[in-house]
Image (cartoon, rainbow, N blue to C red; front, side):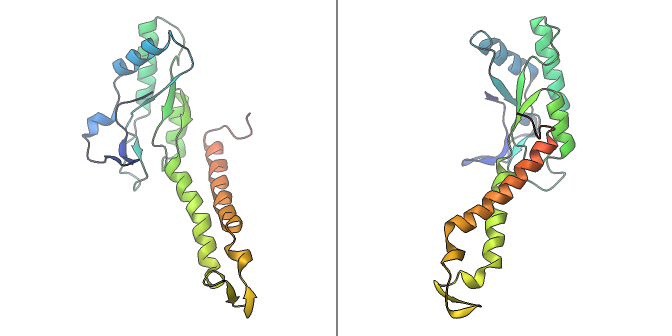
Length: 187
């Protein structure tokens, strides 16, 4: 359940100009969702806003406050009368471009899922982009390249080749993220 507003733009919804205060979910809102969904199943997560934005922006332009998630957890625990420190499974929407410390802080407050769509899109593009730029002279026509006017180029423009490059750079970004989240090598 996504509650509050995640800034930035995604899927044609532009929240770039929303009031900054709208980017921070209130603990009462989280608790209302928690008490509504808990009787149905314990397996749900809440994406609460703590300054998150979709997309990626120049460092310093996004003011994340993951410490708010700790306050939200405490509020729900108090309302429920439980000693459980993190009763809510939280989601970090708009995680692309965040620092390793911001990830670790959010995870320490109960985040169980981090969204990195923009970072992964960029990673995928860089593999394809770099391949195309490096092989440009082999991609301009079907036959003829720097190796000779009669040399075929199919092995260069075959989508299985350049798509693989995008997959490899995306795989590297996922590997980096799993290390950042302290989840590498876990099943």
